[in-house]
Amino acid sequence: MDIKRMRLGGCVWLVVVVITMVAAGKKFSISSRNFASGRYIPAKHATLKVPGGKNISPALNWSNPPAGTKSFVITCVDTNPIAKRWVHWMVVNIPRDSRGIPEGASLSKMPKGAVELANSFGDDGWGGPQPPRGSGLHRYVFSIYALNISTLPVRQGDSLSERQLLALLKGHVLGRAVLFGLFQR
Image (tube, rainbow, N blue to C red; front, side, top):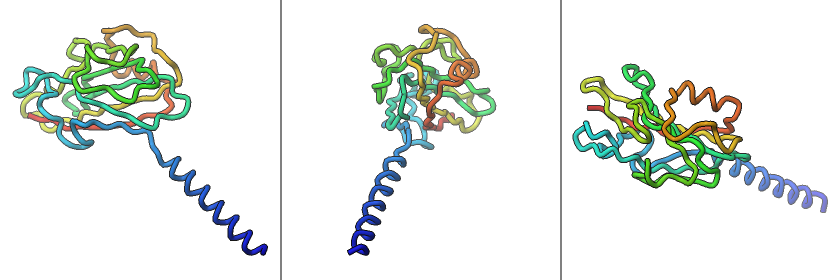
C-alpha cells in the first residue's frame, strides 16, 4: 500500500513539474505575419524611395509578456555598421492589454495611448528600410520591451536616439523579445 502511494505521489509530483516547465517555457515573443524572423522584409514596407516601397509599417504580434507588465515599447533599428543604428520606428506607451499592431497602423491605427516618436529620417512613425545601394545586407531588429511602468515622459514626435530611449527604460524593463528582418538593394 505504501509503495502504491509513493508511486502515485511520485506521478503527481512529475505531472506538476512537467506542467510548471511547460508554463515556464512560454517565452515572451514577437512575430510578424509579413515576414519570419531572419527572412527578408517585403519591399512594400520600404520607403517610397525604394522600388516597390510603400512605407507600410509591418504587422507585429506579441505574446506571453512577463508578469507585472504595465506597458510596452517597440523599436526597429538597422544594425548594419554603415547605418550606425538608424532608428526606423519607436513606439512607446503601448497599453499592457495590447498584443499587436496591424499592418499599416503607423500614424493611423495605433493602440489607444501609444506614442510614435520621430525616426532617424526626422519623421514621426514608421520609416521603412532604405539602405544605400551596394551597402550589402542590412539587419532590422524589432525589439519589444515589457515595462513595469504605464507611461514614459515623451510626446508624439519627440526625437530621441536609441541610446536616449534605452536610458529612459533603464530600471523598468521586465523582458525583451526580438524579431529581425533583412533587406538590401
